Image (cartoon, rainbow, N blue to C red; front, side, top):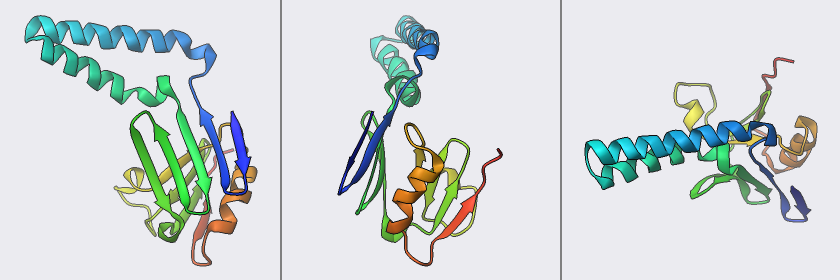
Length: 148
């Protein structure tokens, strides 16, 4: 589940085994949307409908692999990869579910779409911060927005 090396750490978060029924429901809905698209329009629209549902829910049923090393941080789900280099990190926000590495100095309406969100997975907030902090520059702001 987690790996550690001199170059950094990596870990994977995936669907909780208790949530398997939800994965089945998502898959059935994706198939139904595909069949409706095929019946109403054509097989291409059915395939597009299935692909849109599958891609939009990929993090839930595929899981995400996280990597933190001396170059930067990365979150990868399927074909989608989000990366940020340490030189671009301006703000580090500790939240309930993970740590956000942001290139933005202040919170804005584009904040959710910028940077990399690292889910805790096998690590606690303190363990992950101990890995991240040495890579960050002196001008990086550290914020704690945990509710508990």
